Each structure stands twice: as structure tokens, then as C-alpha cells.
Image (cartoon, rainbow, N blue to C red; front, top):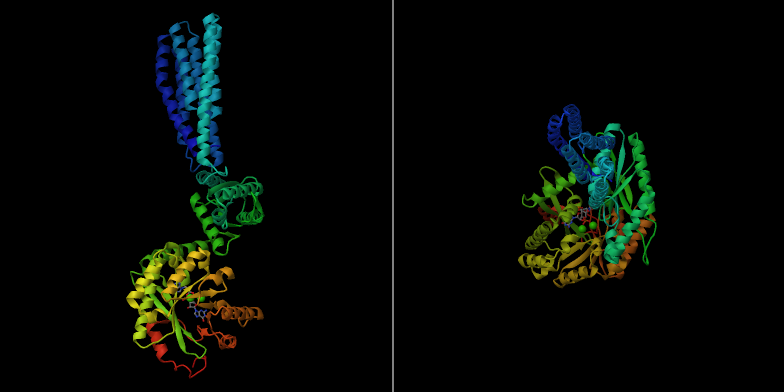
Length: 627
Ligand code: C2E
Ligand code: CA
Ligand code: CA
């Protein structure tokens, strides 16, 4: 297990060894000159200098971030030989000096050998294969030297030397273990034992360097479990943790050899694939593997007494030779994964440029939206609502954003972004205030409506200040009569929140006189039982149902069922998106009461709405069909 820190540690030791050899080496050269062994000492020093040059080359050739795996392994092998050679040279100088008559040289040689052993055991402790042979190279000659003295103190000294060898080995082993442990912890995830994000990014960088050399391709799979949070929230983190472990063991079983799996955090995993010669094979392989993984992950998990099901969303990005940095690939896979999530989860998508354009557009919208209110780019349009006699009985306010750079942007694009960023609170307040002012102004101009609908997004609705804010704006702009015309349109997604809290909030607002409408009815996933608990006044049949009325019997039956249900629950019902006379006739025949759609009018700016209202024949004069 060698990571960046390991290599950098070894790399740092090279200049230390060179310095520790070149400088004291001069002293040994001088000793050699004093003791008539200058020539061998000089040759020895030349070897040290040559070794140092080799060391400097190794030191300069190291660049972790751009080296391929192969090159790095080769570099490390050369480094090992460099260290062995250096200590062999120190063992040589020992042999040279103990071969001399002068006892002072013997003392120096013995100290040199012990000193070198201490240096080796401490500075090379990162790798057993480095410090073990080195210690033997240094200590065995010393032990043999003591034995060869042939006296009792020689035997005692050789025993001491053996003990010292053991102590040095023991110390180096201990440091090595600590180092390995620290490295393991820094590169692995504690819960699953998989590699962590940091290690993965290093690994990916290595892979990219290798691919850049070979011109081959590989792939990244970013796996995110769907609705894992629900398991954690409902069954507790222990069960969540065990589920994660089971997921990991399935991943490990079903990922082909040569792939590396890591946990990016939470319920996100990432896998690098094996190499492929061409891009098409790589794409095919990655999709095949992803499909298999999704199928395996979906099989039932038994955790404690629970039988759990979980699906996964996978984003794929292809790693090619002309790659820049590891993080950009993870980001690409992330974009593809979010695309899967947005399209309903439980699937695979391969990253493409179009996706990144969309993400860029998204970011651009997010950036410009921050200034939209201050720059007065946000306005409201109003779409009239009609009763069965064709009279304008209400209006729905719909927000519009016209940006000088981007042009008009649909609320279906920017409202979700405003929700994600929290801007919806400010924007929602502005919409409420503008709507209230319009309602007031219209009444003052003699435009009487029965209802005035405003779309409220979930995040805005559940914000702690919402009720207080509504109350404040009501007091400022409306009287009791006008308040009773207000209808707040909410969507089924609101039920995903804490239903009891939602009901409480709705009741507070209803007590103030506001009515509630369920927008886009029939498109959500909420259960009828949950819906029937909400204190609703109105349902809006989603325009997709109205639009499909002409298509087949099934869609017609669906609309009739919704209409019947509304009548049983005594709810008003609005059909939105009415575009043709046929649709209107069908709805009229089935007792639908309120209509809204292009058939009558598109959403209109404030003044245009007034004009439209004034220029329609007064009610009762004509049937629902416009003139
Ligand atoms: P929605 O509440 O379902 O609004 C109805 C959408 O259908 C509007 O699109 C409207 O212009 C369009 N529409 C009306 N009649 C027809 C028709 O006959 N045929 C077709 N094809 N479409 C028709 P718009 O204005 O683009 O709004 C889209 C969505 O954006 C709204 O759907 C609503 O969910 C959201 N939205 C709009 N204004 C606001 C707002 O002020 N606050 C919040 N929170 N959301 C808003
Ligand atoms: Ca609406
Ligand atoms: Ca709607």
C-alpha cells in the first residue's frame, strides 16, 4: 500500500543520505591519508561521490503527479538499490579500517558501523524491504569481527551487537507498523474498509498518467444509492451502516478484476475500470458493468429483522489520454449521476458535453437570479380562469423572468434553482407582495374576481417565517373581503415533508381566510390517504391529462375519475391547459366547473389582463366558448 506520502517520505531521505555520506566521508579520507591507506580510501570516496550523483538524479526524476504507475515502480526499485549501495559502501569502509593494525581506526570503524545502522533503522523505517537487508549488511560484519577477536570480551561484544541488531530491528518494525497504520487510516474509510476519496484521487491521477503513456481508455462509475437517507432516518444509523457494508460486499463481488472501488462519502461510491484499447469498447463495458451492478444492488438485503430494498443511480465518465485532472472526471461522472437522479433515479447515464452545457446554463441562471429582483427583471403574468358560462371568475399569477443576457427564462427552469439555493424565500415574498398589490388595484378599478391563485413552492411554504410574512403582507395590502379570494396552489411534493406540520400550517392560513388548491393533480406519487388528510378546497387537473383527452379511453377515464373524486370530496375542480373546444366540451359534459388554458387566453401582463377582462362580453351572454 504505497501512497503519495510514502513516496514523498522516501524521496525526502535521498538528500539526507547524500549529505550524511559526502561530508563525513571527507573525514574518512583524511584518516586514510594519515594512516597510509589513502588510495583505497580515495577510491571509496570516489564511489561515494558517484553514488551521490546517482542519488541526485533519482531525486530530480521524481514527480509523483505526472509519473505513471510503471515509472513510479521503476523509480522506487532504483531508489532501493541506491540505498543498499550506500550502506554497502559504509560496510566497505568498516572492512577497510578494521583490516588495519592501528586500533584507533578499529574504534572509528566500529562506531561508524553502529552509527550507520542507527541511521538505516530510523530513516528507512517506511519499508521493511529497505531497512532489513541494510541492517544485515551493516551489522553482520561487525558481529563476525567481534567473534574473530577470539577472546571472551569479543564473544560478549558480539552478543551485544546481536542484541543491538535485534533492538534496531524491533524499533524499525514498530515505527513501520505505526506508519502503515497511519497511512491506512489516511487512505481508507473506517466503516467499509474501502479506499477513501483522497486515495482515490491519487490513484486516478496515476491511472491517468499511465493512460496518457499507453493511449488507452478507462472509465469512472459514480454510484449513489437512492433514498438511502430514508433508511438512516427511519431505521437508524446502525441499520444504515450495516446496509452500506452489505452494498460494499456486493460491489466487491461483482466488480471485475483490475477495478478499484472507493467510498467518496455517505452513500456515494466510485469505481475505476480496467483499460480498454478504444473508446467504444470502454463505453460498452462501462454500461454493461453498471447495469449488472444495478441489478445486483437491487436484490433484497436482510439486515437484522429487516428486509431492505435499495436501488442505485450511476454516472459514467470516460477517462482518455488527453485528460487534465482527476477531479474533472469525478465531476463529469457526478453530473451524469445527477442526470439519472433528475430522471427518476435507478439507472445509468454516460456523461456528455450537452450535460455539461446544461450544468453551465444552470450555474449561469443561478448567478444571474441573484440580481434579478434588484434589477426588476421579475414580473407577474396573470392567466384568467373561467366558469361554465365563460365568465372570467378568477386568475392565476405566474412569475416571469426576462434577463438582458439570457432572454426570457421559464419558471420551470428557474423556480427549482431558486428552491435549491434558498432564493425562493425572497422571490416568493416578492411574488406574494406583487400579487396582493395587483388584487387590490384591480378591485379598486372595478375588476371583481371570485378567486386569485398564487403558486407557493414547498421550501417557501415550510419556511419558518412564511405564515408571519403572509399575515404581514395581508395587513398591508388586503382587507377581509380580498383575503377570502386568495387561493394558494401547492403541489403534491409538499406531502413528502412532515405531513402533520404541513396540515398545521395550512390550518393556520385557512383560519386567516386563505383557500388551498392542489396543483398538477395526478402527476405526483403521494398516497390518496395522505392527500385526503390535507384541508384542501380545490384540485387542478394537470394539463398533461387534459392534453391527452383526445388520445384514448384510458386518459378520459382518468379525468372522469378525478372529477368524480373531487365531487365526492366536495372540492372545486379546475381543468388547466384547456387548448381545444373538444377538451372543453368533454370537461363540461363531466361537470367540471372551472377552466384555464390557451383556448381562452395565455397568461397576460397586468394591463393586458385588465383589457382582456373589460372587453369580454359580460357573463351569461354566451356559453363557455370564447367569442
Ligand atoms: P403551473 O402552476 O402548473 O402553471 C401552469 C403552466 O401552464 C404555466 O406555465 C402556464 O403558462 C401553462 N399553461 C397555461 N395554459 C396552458 C395551455 O393551454 N397549454 C399549455 N401547454 N400550457 C399552458 P409557466 O408559466 O411556464 O409555469 C410553469 C410552472 O412554473 C408552473 O406550473 C408553476 O409550477 C411554476 N410557477 C410559475 N409561476 C410561479 C410562481 O409564482 N411561484 C412558484 N412557486 N412557482 C411558479
Ligand atoms: Ca399553478
Ligand atoms: Ca399546474
